[in-house]
Image (cartoon, rainbow, N blue to C red; front, side, top):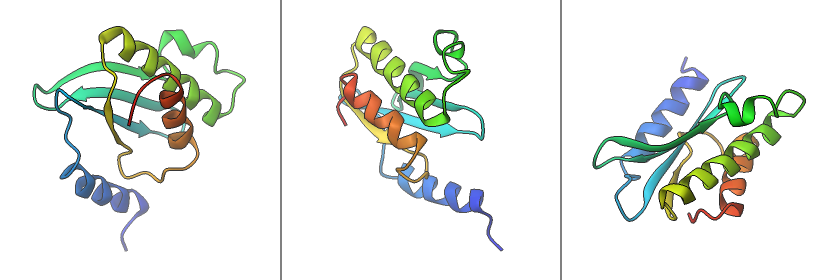
Length: 119
């Protein structure tokens, strides 16, 4: 029997064959655990993380104590958009890491778009 996480990882591997962050559009990858959500913008050619944010970031950590997980994810999206503007990144390829475009992943993506990221 194939577990749910194994199916997600196989979807992620399949998608990663096609999505690759280059200088013109870097890769915005998302990881979510049961409690937190993480997002980072990666330049795959150089193998470097340009910008990173999560619910554990000090800017967000105190704000999310009373919020729902999807609301916390939108705060992470706003923070990653703000940091990417500061570093000069405008266009990204969205890598949802095999997760459904639903709930926390969707609210993070919409907040990034509202913050000015294009994908």
